[in-house]
Length: 354
Image (cartoon, rainbow, N blue to C red):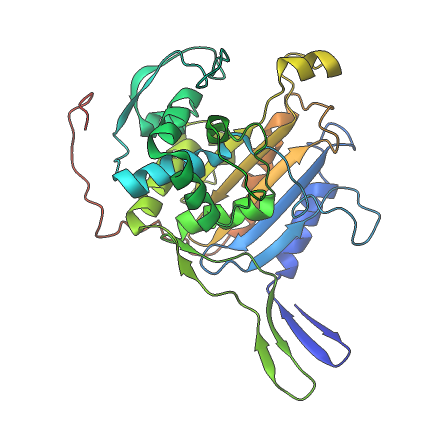
């Protein structure tokens, strides 16, 4: 819909029906266990970065207040594994999804701090497809170390991820931890790039402005190729498994090819003790995913980090994604992701490397 003000015609990218759906999901939804839980939603067009809907929060009473879809800066958890670890590794090393990394006990370099998988176990030699599908932490850190901190940061920045001035990437960034924070807006822009064959479009809500004298100002950002098409396709192909058989099955939309990634941040032992966080409590729950048509990134949590989410609220980001994407894809054609000529599909012997 368009805005008319002071003689200007402002052509927005927003979809009124999609915006109404997002409003209902946030404000008329019995799945939230209490009224204090907040959420931020960004829905974009995968191909051009145009924002179709913004869910800035729940039960909002102040206009132009804090927007949980745009202003939020929270730890993204494992949603960044394709961005910080596996994406740059495929880009620079041409790893296939069958590349093997050993999941084994490991400490952060120069420390006595153990890197833990969520279940406390180790899966041994497995493919990066397996590790990403089941969100194993140690292989993601190993991949980041191998590709290098500088290349990882450069890859993320090309996807619209912002870092503080002179901020250095460290090993925990592979897991979206420590000082690594971002918004649903940034995450949607990054994930849409994987779904758009490696071409980045900055998420934007204004298409053009028409001045009173009839002159037009094109507000659409320029598209930019930021990765090879093989990187985008192979990440997408693995993220499809996340939704069909991995940690993101609750986000699956029947009949629609979807790629996506779950993310959960964690408390340190010190914060658990200080804030009396119970077993299973987490500060942030994320899901980001895309089809060839639409991309959505969703954050769920409390305004203050010291208040923890518990099950089933930790699953809300996935159910919100499913409800929104089911609505958006109803009655429209959604082609599968196209395999580029740079990728060849061959049979391999299980356990071989490469």
